[in-house]
Length: 183
Image (tube, rainbow, N blue to C red):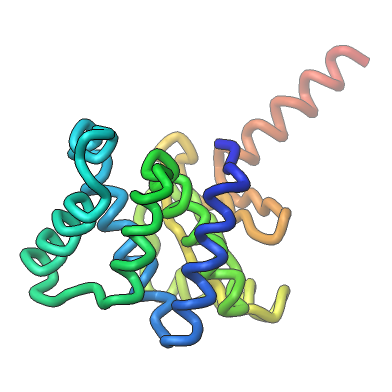
């Protein structure tokens, strides 16, 4: 997915506010919630007849219903500005960008781990320790289950990919055999 410059500017602004108020992580959760509401009721939120204040009020009420609290004036102002400027279609992009930008601003690194089965706590600790030692940043692990790997894992971070899966080894052997037969 290509991210728009518009979405990135809104994300940058929200990150600045989140940092000042020490709510970077909370705003990430809030933005994810807003994205889900937006996608569920896109017809309402994309309706030009509905005023921005009404859209913001719906978001606020949804927050109070689910979280039993208001997201706060700063976050509601942000959402209202998004609606006033008719940028609601960028909310899904904002949420995705915010997630990655927040990880970066907190000096962390995203680590994508694909495994055939769910990792144990010990395995997660080993990966955390390895990545932290390798790049000097705190890892944020996103685990994906891919049964086609058979066993092992594929770990991606900082532009590197480490494939220690059975499927990866079998693919490597198959390429070598094919190369030998061809040669």
